[in-house]
Image 1 (tube, rainbow, N blue to C red):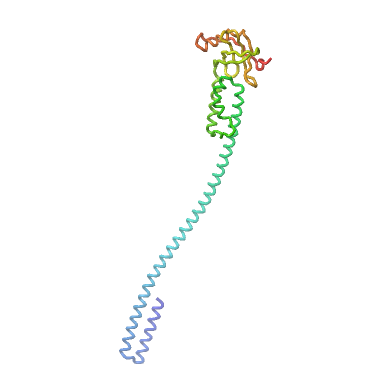
Image 2 (image 1 turned 30 degrees about the vertical axis):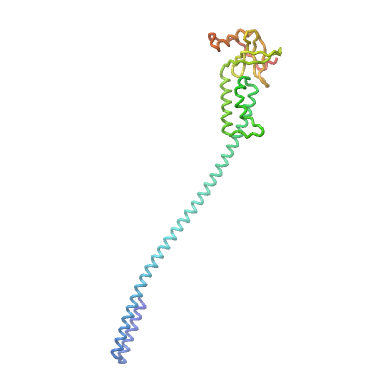
Length: 257
């Protein structure tokens, strides 16, 4: 606007000066024509400038908006980075806890397996024979891979459940073993869990009791118990009416005295 005003002032001065010196009409018309062209040029440039100014203003606003968006995204990225680092730390901590728990569980399973294997030395022979296929799964054999962890746990639980159930019941077994005289006989044996057992032969002439020891069951002959033990066998076989049995309960280690 300032440039336009200055041009107009110069043009007025120029016309005035021309009038003073007596310029002819033709020259005056030419000057007016040039003045009109100059005004049009100024108007066009002013319009173009306004358009360019508006365009630059829009570009400026767009750039400012983009800068704000970039700053917001940068802040979000920083927050996400902090959150990711925290999540990674939590996952690492959780992983360590899982590994520690797994190692503890593996150690506990190994200890439990050792205890179950030791129990096979004192559980009744008939029960041990029935459970042997399950026991063999837990024994690591040379050249063969160990069974999967879940299968090991399931096998151990099955063994423990079977042994526990046997210990809570009275079981009648047919079993062959030798007494002090070295003669091998087949007996009917009443197992009262894993604590004590009473045996009698088919004819009711040889009888006695047994208890688990450090290397298996120990048997002691006591023929006077034959009738009572035979009655117990008949009760379990539903061949006699149930009643209380009068059987001695030996003290621990008394069988070896």
